[in-house]
Every structure is written in C-alpha cells, then in structure tokens.
Length: 442
Image (cartoon, rainbow, N blue to C red; front, side):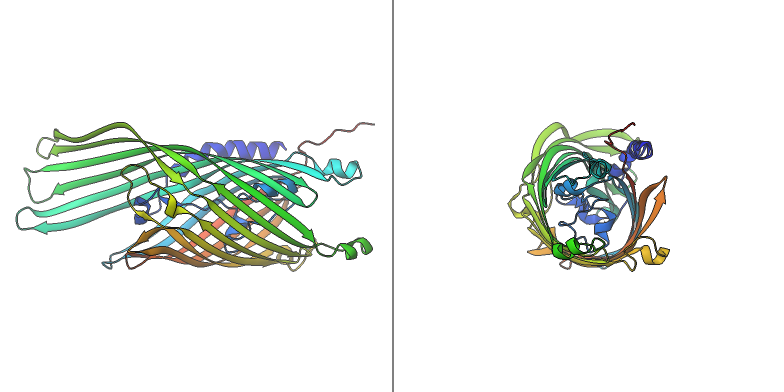
C-alpha cells in the first residue's frame, strides 16, 4: 500500500504542468478552449469507448458506477505526445510536436476482496472511492500576422494564448449485486491568458499597442453514472467451476448542467517605441465577473466480455452546447456535440501465465465526434482510429500494467482549418490489495 501512496501523492506536485499547455491550437482561442477527454489510456486505445466498462482491477474514470465493481486499489498516471500538421484557409501551414501529463487517478475499494475470501462469502454490496486530477480545457497558440499599406508600411500583429482549466474529481460508487450507481463531483479551476501586440515595423517613431487579457475560472460540476452487469452463462459456470464469465454490460453517464465563474483582468496600453514608456492606457479592467454555462451531457454504451479472451465496446455521446452562454468577451459560436465510438480487444492467453506476447491485451478502435465550435453553420469534426497494447507485469508482488497506444486522426472546421495528427498515449497502472484489509491473528 505504501508504494501506491508514495507514487500517487508525490506525483501531485506535477499538477502545475496541466496548466502549461504547449500544444499549438488556433481554435483554442474560441469558446472555453480545447476540450480534453478525461479517460484512461485503455479507453483511448479502443476508440474512446468504454462508458459501460468495469473491472475488478481498474476503474472507469468517466463512469463512477464502476467503483462499486472495483476490488483492488488502482493507481494510474498517463501521458501523451502529439504531432500535428495544421493548415488554414489561406494554405498557411504549421507543424507542431507537443506533450503533456494527461491524468492522475486513484480508485479505492472500501471493501477488501481478501476479506471476502477469508469470510468465505460473496458480498452483495460494495463501495468505492476515487480521486483524480486532469486537464479539462487547454489553450495554446502563437502566431504572427503581417500586412502592409502605403500609409504605414509594414505592420505586424503577434497573438499568443496560453493556460487552461484543470479538474479535480472526487468519485463515489455503490454496487448492489449486478447494479452499480455512482457520482463524480468535479472542482474546476484555472487561468487563461490572451496577449496581442500591434506594431508598425517601418516607422521608428511610432507606438506599439499591447493587449493583455487574463481570465481566472472556477466552478463545480457533477456526473451521475449507472452500470448494469448481466452474466450470460450462469448455468455453465455452476456446472464447471473453471468456466469464465460471458458478460454483457450497459452503462450510462449524465453530466449535470452547471456554470463556470470567470474573473477578468485586462490591460490594453500604448507604448512609445523610442522611449519604451507608456503613453496611453486604452483599457483597464479589474476583477470583472461573468459566467459561462457547462452543458447537459449524455453518454451511453454497451460492453461485451467473452471469457476474458476478447471484448467489444460501443458508445454514443450527446452534449447540449447549443443551449449554453459563454463568458463576457468570449469568442466563437457553439453547436451541439454528437459522437460515436467502437472498439475491442483480444488476449491470446486469458490465464495470465503464458508467454509475454500472448498475455498482452491487443486493442483497436475507431471514432467520430463533432466539436462544439461551428463556422458558417458547419461543425468542427474529428475522426480517427486508435490501437494499442496493454502489457501486464508484477511489481512488489502486486499486479501492474503498462498501456501503450496510438491515434491517427483528422480534425476539420469547414474550410477554415484542417489538422492531421498522430498521437501517442502512455499510461501506467499499479494495483494494491492491502487497503482496508482486516488483520487476523491466531
């Protein structure tokens, strides 16, 4: 247990890196920034599906109802790297490599499975608790727009955006027999900064305009989760003690509408180039308050597990962004989000004792998702394929797994912008079965 505690809490000091987004994304200037999927590396390798997924060894970040089915403490950390080729409507192109810490999660079953074995009875009820930290939105871009005129000569405008919103999540799940319910409570916090510099490059005695807009956001949101598990071969399992389950599961997650509270500080000033001194304050705003809505979200899915040898997943998603209002001075027009994800995995040796390559879990998926931004009544669209492998191993007499996944995709917004990308996901899972263990002495 101490190994998980040390690993999990020591890595919390890295949480500041969530706010230091280094990805180049011009579209992150609009709305509340680029929305980030809060999901496990496992889910990212099966087409971003898995809302109906639960396991005794790892929990589902999105659906807190899975915590009721968790039997071993699960600590996870994930990273990602991304290469992209971005092209705008004027055929300007940019190439970008970026990377970030993706999530830190800890799931704890409140009833230990070893106690269940020692008591020689199966618990009808079980509970689980989770803590997590992940990015919710991100903003990152830097580019220069150059122009010229007869009157002023060459002019340039430099635009920079940075920051984002992070999310700390507290989850609780409860299971009664094959039915699970749960709730995720999220605290949202973060800072976003937009900077612009206007300069007249050919006029030495001219002035330069500096525009600095900073936004601090806080808020609370909640997600309700439901899971139902149906074992399809109960008769066979009663006859054959070594038989494995054929399981069909249904999952539902509902994100409750909520609000983000924004506080804006802006300073727009003009500076004389010869003396580098301010000659005028164009705009000064201090602690201006406004709010932005977060929408109703609904995600439903189905999951089939065939005797731990293979599995199939399917999810649908709806987010009601069309009904929300943005914060003061925000840019962009919003539209509803719809999504479809399918995926699956196979494992050649389900016993876990075979050769390394046979014990691995090989995953594949595909997805389509419309974005929440729109241009000329055309939605942002994201489509791609995912694949990867889960490699189990033993660490300090506890089970663990390394997740290595890849994603190839394309994002478009009408003719305004096109992006082709390749993404790498790396995650580590470490289990511990000694939490809440009853000590027995002879």
